[in-house]
Amino acid sequence: MNSYFFFSNKKRIFLLVSFILGGLFSLSFDPYNLPFFSLIIVGLFFKLNDYIFLNYGKDFKLMFSTGTLFGFSFFITSIYWITNSIFVFDSSLAFLVPFPLIFLPLILGIFYGLMQLINAFFWSLNISRIFYFSVFWSLFELFRSTILTGFPWNLIAYSWSWSINFMQSLSLFGVFGLGFISIFCAAGIFSINSKKINIFLCLFSIFILIVLYLFGYNRVLNYENVYTNENKVRIVSTNFHQDEKWSNESFEKIKSFGSNEIPTFFPETSFVQHQDIQDNWFIGFIRVDNKEFYNSAQFNNQIYDKRKLVPFGEFIPMHKILKKAGLKNLMPFDSFSPGKPNNSFSDYIVPLICYEGIFPHIVKENILPTSGVLINITNDAWFGDGAGPKQHFTHARFRSVENGLPLIRSANMGISGLINPIGEVEKIIPHGEMSFLDIKIPRKIRSTFYTQFGDNIAYFFIVLFFLIGYSTSKLNKD
Image (cartoon, rainbow, N blue to C red; front, top):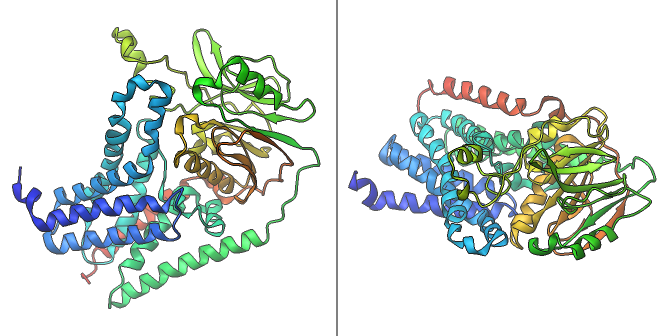
């Protein structure tokens, strides 16, 4: 080991600054939502790379460490609430807390470390670094969202949830495209110096942000909230802790919120294994089929099985291998089975069970030309009272803007409500309340640019900017 790497005062300062920036980055997201703060943090992180390069050149170990520390600090401060799920499931498993509290943020932080490792290879002092930085940050957000089971939580685009106007760009670029533009603008603004090209890129970045704002402002201004018809539906929000959620008393209470006249939407797994219900009730329940368990929804005698399961919450990775190896005792529960794509569930309703609402591609795959509303049912009892339920609600809200569809959300111990096609919250039942809303469903917006082209837009940005970065790398250094 190179002791100088670990004990140099200058290098320790870089590591400390990275760690602090990662922790502060959390303030850009729910429940804080500091306006433009993510651009400031990303811009400062970009400048940190410049200082490292000026002092140490292409120091791969230092760059990898700064990225990992940044990511570790970001995730430990923004998804700390995941530890609550262990105590909800079984407090005797408290010894497992270090995994979601320490090891999970560390694993996720490595994505930023690998990003920095590649940055170190391409870094220079000319403008190519701005394009490369944008490309590699976006690539590793995509990797984080897809590798293994994927965890697209608190992508940088979610830091715009404070502004309904900036959010409208989701209808064009989606969450990854908006994230890409955010990174480029942050790097462009913070690259400013006395050189003309840097001044131009700074002004161009500000211009992009102004255009995005004006596009969103105009879209919101011209949106007319028209309802599909005068018929209402009911959204039920419950507030049962996990240990009481499936009792007979709770079940009867849940059923009492249902309407005999209008369609009623209930939270995830609220009906356990009960299926003796009215046809116009949209329920979440656990389906058993040939010894396989599914987290399912039912409406008008049609069944949808959850496709994207929560690792270690709904399934144990490699559980079949563990069973065959005789290690079933290592699994605290039986795994659910994932559902298959099912566009025959409804021509009008797009079902999303809990975790599925944070995966844009799953939402897009479930949408038909005739689809008119997103239905997200969830059980946020696992998340506790911290930032988790708020972040989960925001992630689902973004899917509405991306696809121009209204969203009905029914949650247990979470946030329930109605979101219109431009992401405005029309009706809400806050976290911690047990109630229901009778609402009319807004009419969808015609197919958005994102619905038609999906994340191909982000891929196009990545390829284009990489080519621009490569071509500008041949220019003289600033």
